[in-house]
Length: 171
Image 1 (cartoon, rainbow, N blue to C red):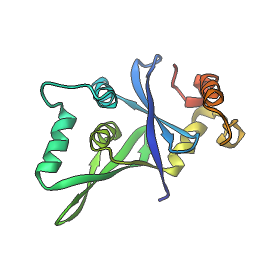
Image 2 (tube, rainbow, N blue to C red; image 1 turned 120 degrees about the vertical axis):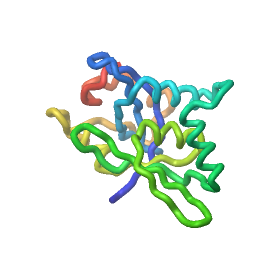
Image 3 (cartoon, rainbow, N blue to C red; image 1 turned 180 degrees about the vertical axis):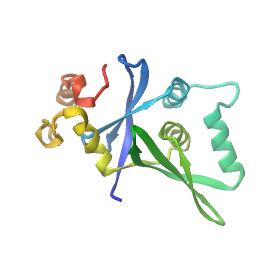
Image 4 (cartoon, one colour; image 1 turned 180 degrees about the horizontal axis):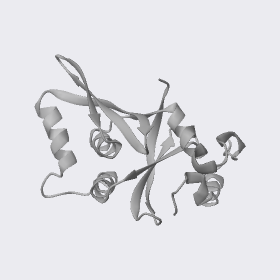
């Protein structure tokens, strides 16, 4: 399984389903991976991305505290596959007694990874396969920004992308 490091680019709302979408972007690249998530997970991700202070720990804060309290640390998150439009992920936790891999939803995994500042990886085929669903344009025919683009050119490129480029995702 070939893994590619990704990072949270943004959160959006799929207006056709009123579902939240977290957009992961290939680190140092242009490929994107949209994952539909629930409202509580979206809120948890936004809270952590903006480093907002909370009086009491949220569920994902509790998960972090449990991992640390049991002598572990989150080394990475792997988004491993999608089956029947359901994504799968694993938390890779290191402890003195050895590594533990825990099956988890990508939304929870992302929220926890942000709290640990741990890297997130996705199976490379997920970055292209989703663009091919429902008759979408193959990725090799999509224009990609060159490495030489300025920040302003990249911003313009991203703003001009069509919602159809993301499957069912609408901005």
